[in-house]
Image 1 (cartoon, chains in turn cyan, purple):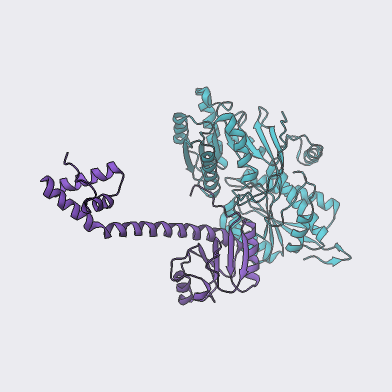
Image 2: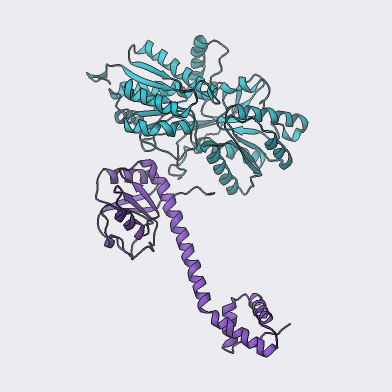
Length: 386
Length: 193
């Protein structure tokens, strides 16, 4: 709990860092944890004693998330938790965060339809990822996609929305298939795709399922050039740099992913950020949007606590919504009603070096988590980067 | 569900004494794009909003300007009590969804979607029932027309019915309408061919 002294926050704030570094989405969890930890290290140099992290690793075990959040909120006295990757884990810890009037900093792309007062959403929702992605794809590749997804709310809702967008575009969904989180038997789906010959493939699979799928599509493209990425790309809204080593060199080359951040962005802020990350983690480290968002969330959290003079969630939320805060994702403004960040849209294409070439960017899009069209989008400033 | 439900621009009436619940509820409704007003007085039947959220803990019959379950608008009950009488009251007014008190903002959108879905389903079911009732009411006419065809064309009942149905289809009328014309003599008897 903070102490308010002469308008400045003088106490130590404990921030919970809740990521699973093992299990099907372990690569994302490790990047989230590293990003958060790196921010905490930088903050310790800047404001010694301001932040004390509490790291808990639930090991991709859903009940462990609840236990971890309980320990953070009740035993350690954290009011802020940065973390969770899946919507399943977020929904699990939310009631507890509400009960303790804490603030969960959720920084992953997700399927939308949520605006909880006890959450700050620094990850993108569909009007910030799927909608601009389809606006890009349909005129270029056609309106007859094939949809695959992990068998839980992320896959289901993203594909439902994709189906709606395709319907509005007068197209047709050629197939929709789901796999359990750790399932890697993708042969039947790939055979179906080969037969139906879609315009593109929306991949909402997670972790090893997704890696197996990308490898099988690569093999299919080698057999039949109609399925090479130039003709029929596999597109995602959550595939980032941190998973490319697990997918393997060259396997996903040419495939597309949407994100609010890519390592390959050439802004001065990002070049400086990359230099700092390289000196801490070594020059080979590729920064994913997960790493960058976790880093930005911890920084934003600390900054808002300093401005508010307290770690009390309502005051922190007000500080966040009052003005845009500079971040590695660009200036971040948290909407006071939805608690979502306005985020840029970048489309990346995986290159031979296992990085993303940014092929299209749009400036910050205000989040519209319930897709009401309530806020007009910031006029898109299309800019072809390469 | 294919289409994303969108309540943008909808008018919502919250019938509840103003308190922390109505404040949070209004905020969430605004976030979902609705225009919400709060009052604790009977609604005007001539100017109904698009959706109504009513306090089922303290609500009374005159609060809602309709009788029984045929709510003319989607209705959501706000309920803290677990008393069966209060639940029955909410159902009796035609509520299609419940939001439990103390209210979690995450309960609002699902309740609106559900209440709207139930409302549309009930409206469609009512129309279907009315249509079927009308047809049952006119069944004697069809029977009378079939009798005439049997006598005039010397065919069996099944054949007479087929003739009538064929004629209705050709003229794009219902069986009941064509039967009524025949029985009234306004229509020559259709040929057996």
